[in-house]
Image (cartoon, rainbow, N blue to C red):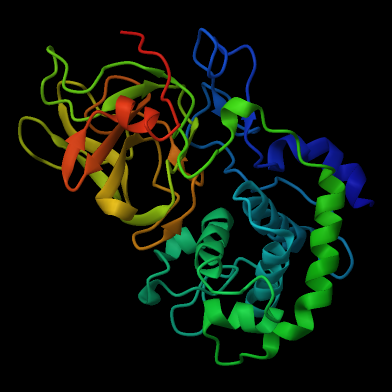
Length: 357
């Protein structure tokens, strides 16, 4: 079966190029409503069980690789494409996974190694469950790859070894041609990347975490302890890192307001019964800056210590913790002190949009 034939039927599911969904109640920045940039496979009302971006439901065999292996390679490739990783980086990643797992999402390996890249939880890559999610595993690989000085021009096996620290540092070289061919086949099946509308792009060193209207403001008269702003967006809207930095926190913070008992983040919170940020992420940036992203609908897509690039997906909108409905609570801190995110972001050329209330 020709790979292009099948992919044409499923490309709307597998692509992780972020699209601005039309007819969802508003225009993008500069318009009068709320613009939403959604993954192509997620609708505004979708549940948290939606297929993760980059996880195709079916791919045909190509060359020596069966459908499962091609699907895993496609997850690696589309994750890299969505994160702006050059083609060379995507080939390095696929070649690495070919060597480490033969493109199988393995539940175990040497010592505590798991997943496509045989990454080890004990070495700080993430939990075993996270590392068996192809998008997460690929993201952590890319996050370390881009920190390797000169990776773009060094031999593939050296770049892969700099990330993996394998006991067999020369083993990756033999996979360069097969990886190049498979990446080309996947890219050819997908066709040219869809143009990302201007309101959905990451621009410059700072970008909006999502295109949305501003609801509750910073330390308003009715909420004097509200240390951020609420950005109103549908559930499962992608949340992006406002700037490059290092993940300082990625965890669940949700307790019962009355008893202090664990509420958890496997369900929505409540404005009266729950306290805490729910699933949340803190990213430390240069110059003593920090941004915080609260009420994510699922476990964050990033891990503590991971370097993220501007606009990199870090999670999706939800309503966990102290929350009355789907939105992103966004904070900006200067040397440890919260500051109003609206002028903070405007000063950096990334306006958060209009205030609705």
